[in-house]
Image (cartoon, rainbow, N blue to C red; front, side):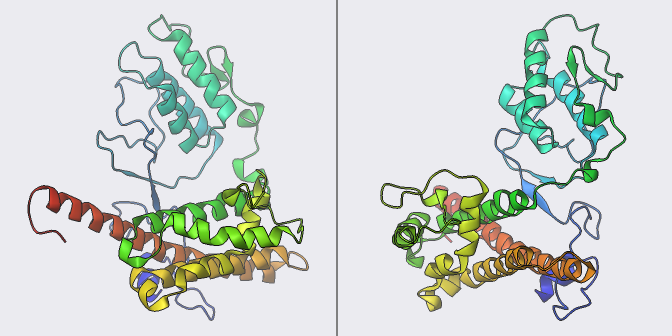
Length: 336
């Protein structure tokens, strides 16, 4: 925590968690050569562009590389950025040669905050005009692209931050699901000697969920583990709420043999799971929203972000070691 806080924090939290990083996801490193927090691009993200677009790619979404690897920074969404992204993506997807595919266009617009309905409109319009005369397209129009009109909200005086998202979906469909995916990725990278795996974890947890089903708990909908015996349905946020409620019990499986598991980073996992559990528990049990609650929630979130950063770094390092071992084994050199 101390190392992460000193390297990535904008300041130190004035609380008992004095070494918790005060995260600012838009901040760049001290050297100014990249974002403090970034994320791996999806394989469908475009890696090439056609020069000559009347509208430039939005800052932060103007990174295109031929290689498979690459990361993107977080960006602050606003309507003008989405408009710019749609116009840029339309140009790239409507070229007569080397146009972006539908998958690449949809992926790019998703990373620019554009909803699927609008993204589909952009790709359909680009497909219908590919290789045709596009003189009627006014890239300076604030209202839309050709026959495609932008949503009315994009043209209003309201900002993106004026729209309140459902906290439940942000917590569970967003963060809880991402945590689950991150832990699955960690388990999948572990060597056989760790005696842990993603398949082993799911198999071990299924009896617990099967037993809980008998209690008919309203909140117990665990879709990630749905099966013939568990019998849980495909709910939306509810199934991820279940995972959070049970997370400390579920992921304790990874620490059954702690002496062995500690060598592979189970303590980093535990800190991340426990800190997010504490954050969600506080969010769902408050007696009213006030300044004290917001300050407490802010500290809990900062603590969670610090722990998830540590866990993410461990996974990245494990991936680099695996890649190195494979590469060295392939050229006949000493295997790490």
